Image (cartoon, rainbow, N blue to C red; front, side):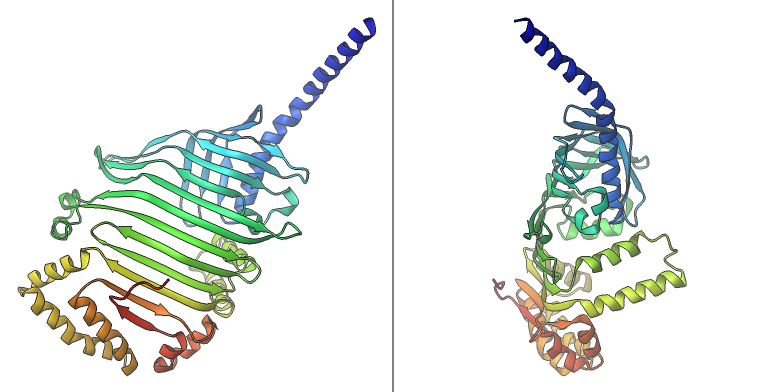
Length: 409
C-alpha cells in the first residue's frame, strides 16, 4: 500500500514538473504560430502584423492585427482573434481547426457618416508549413474555407449596401509524395442589396438616370467556380456569374494552361516589390513578366455572356426618349449605324459576325455572347502575333458572336 502511494506521488510530482517546464514552450509556440502566418502570407504579397499571442488550452488568442494587401493601405483589426484547435505537426508546421473574429462595427468616414458592420467572420481548416517549407504553393493551401455572415454599409444611418453571406471554399488534392497537385475552389456572395436611391442627393443627373432605369434598389448574387491543376497550370473557370434580379446576368468563363506556381511566384514578387512602379527598372520588370506570360499562357477557350432580365429594354426606352424618338425608331437607327461602326475595323468577316447578332439582340434583348475557341490551343504570344493580320486573327482565336441562343453546356 505504501509503495502504491509513493508511486502515485512520484507520477503526480513528475507531471507537475513537466507542466512547469512546458509552460515557456507553449508561450513560445503561440508566438511562433502567428509568426508563421506572417511568413506564409508574406510570400503572396500580404503584410500581417499580429499583436501579442497567448495560449489557452489548444487555442491561440491574438490581440489585434494589421494587414496590408497588395496595392492597398493597412487594415487594422483592434479585437481578439481566436485560433481554435491549434496543434503542431510532426514536421514542424501548424494546423488549426478554425479562426473566429468578433463582429466588426466600425466607422470609415465622418461626412457623410459611414459605418460598416460584419458578423460571423470565420476561417476553417488552417494549415501552415514548417519554417523551411514556406512558399507560395504552401500559402495556396493554408485555408480550407473563409466566410462571413451579413455585411452592412450605412451612410448617415441609411443602409446603402448589404451582403447576406460570403464564402470561399477550397479542396486540395495531393500526390503520393504529398505535393499539392490540384485545387478546386468556389467563391460565393449571396443576398447582395444595393440602395442607390440616395445617389441623386449628391449627383442629381446620375440619380435621375438611376431612377429612370429602375435601379434604385438592386439585388443579386455572385458565384465563381474554378479548377486548377498545378503541374501544367491548367486553370478552368467555368462560372464567374454576376446575377442581378430584374437587371441581368453576366457570366465569364475561360480555360487556359501555363498558369503555374512559378509564374504566380513571379507575379506576387513583382506586386510585393518596393520599386517605384513608374521607375524604369519597375517598368522593365513588368514588361519582361508580361512577355513571359504571353509565352507561357495557352488559351483553349473563353467567353463572356449576358442574359437580360429587364435592363436592356429599359435602356433602349431611356435613350429613345432622350433622343425624342419611339423605341422602334431608335432601334432601327442603331441597327443602321452598326455596319459603319463595325466596318471601321476594316474586317468584312467581323461585320458578318457582329452586325446580325447585335441587330437580333436589339430587336429582342434576350442574350448575347462573345466566345473565343481556337481550332487548337494557342499561346497568347501566337495570338498576339496574329493580330498583325486582323482578318486572320478572327480565325486564329475562333471568334463567335451569337444572340438569343441557349447557353452551351
